[in-house]
Image 1 (cartoon, rainbow, N blue to C red):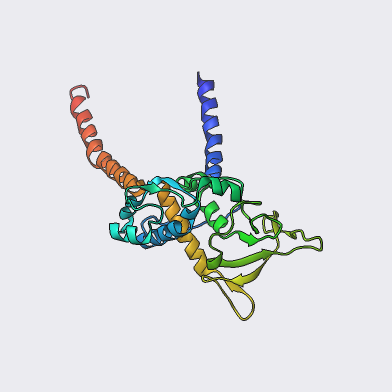
Image 2 (cartoon, rainbow, N blue to C red):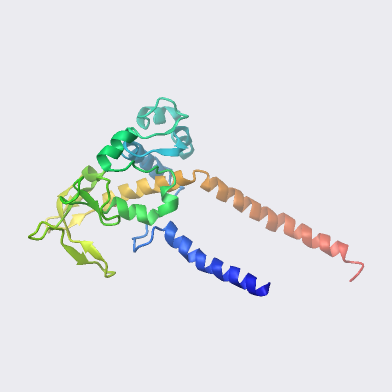
Length: 261
């Protein structure tokens, strides 16, 4: 019996880091700061998501009226964020027809309701900054995080265009990154609304990085809208147990055993 318990315990210890790696999407990704208490960031992220992502992707576990929890009014939601329905209680369906999506992209774009929970915020942050122009791909786009991705860059006007260098045979040139992984050799073809090039040629991407962070922040919130309330409830329960139940249990035990001791 003891050996069985030891085996189970060892299995749990091994499984824990594996589950964390899966949740984080694996790979060496730059960590992104997520702040679900920042309502302005969540509102900006919701606007980006509904304006760009909902064109092709659904979020069937998220209703539009849930956006009131991040400080938006029903009128603001209806006037600025609803393009696929006129009912604020509806879930977020994609604007594109699934049949057309499969014909154009080779597959139906996945539902994004739980993508942040399955892939991790760091993965999504890297993915949204990893698009580059690749003429060898059917859509003309590729991604450093997900090679041969079928998805074109939805935010290229904001980020600008990074392109891959091609060799004499017209194939992408690969180089090694700081971790020793083979990655495409990129250069800036043009900047966007959220990036700018300095006179020395360096491209400043902070504004786009913040733009992508707001989107990822909202997607993390979307994966579990009740997360903050759940944590608040948990803290209240812990305080109650420590401040009320623990002293009560102590004095009850003391009263119960006083005649014996």
